[in-house]
Length: 430
Image (cartoon, rainbow, N blue to C red; front, side):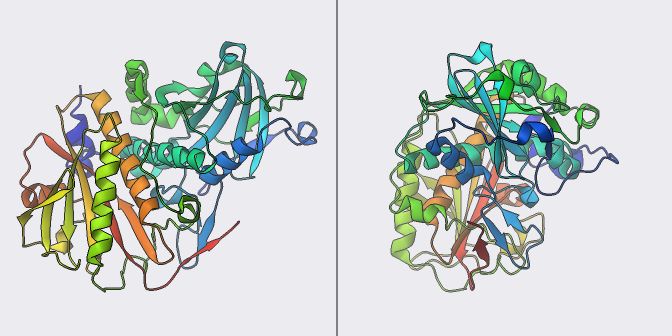
């Protein structure tokens, strides 16, 4: 067994394996092709609610001028790669959402899934691993956590609830053979969310109306060369389940949803430089406490670095149950990131860690999912016209370990910057 936590956190720059392939990797989204004669009719039977929820999370929402990663969705993704796509199943009827075309396709009927209604989240992992190597697995887990949180919030907006999530890590074509995607045996299911039966769906759909969907590029060999397929095979039987979520209420959630901004741009990293208001920061801490208390499986440790917040000393703090304990009043902000980003004018940032044994795959998966889930909900809560909350993984683990005085069995998973922008940089596509 490999040292999972060490390999994907503090040792990731030294131990990360990469393989190279000459196959093209589309920069924006997975490319699906359809038989022309089968695409004459628009998909019928999908409810407006399901379409709205799926589009709100998986469609392209904004673009940023001057940003190398131009088009953005509601969830953050490394380099805006967005390797995930959803498949909706209602009593066996199976639908694919293609974000590149902003269309739904009816894949067919799966008798083995005829008793459930669920949203299955699948990943075209090589699109991330082609750039980040095996470290792409950890990045995909984080993105899956963002997606899970975003879906829960999207259902809240529409007055519905998901009945928890189940992480599966199966090859999609093996799990849903009757509604398979040609050339798609390199796609894996990450998790599914059980939903209430949608009585309006699947009316009018027949097996003869299903379309033949073919994935343009297949990366099975690349995932095998990298060894990711073996890791997913080991994860498959873990039966990791996430309980139904009931996040603390976010005022004006529908409005804030559209204003969540990660500001992943050259000039977007620079905050306005004004001290962050004390009352707003205290409200943030109160909401963070409510959020962590709402998660029955909460298991992370949180740290806060303050540079410029009214009424608070600059320094590194340990967060415990709504309270901050100052650990060190001398911080070197240039040492926080391994990527060399300039955090000089960021009012405060959050870092998340977990204590664990090195080879606990189940805990490794759960902790990454939960770290991203918490950060995503906080980002929506924090959203406004000129605020930004940028998640980042390029943590300098050694420096954080020294600053927060943590032991060798505590691993830093994720971080997030919070601040106010000088100028708005994103423009809506919808």
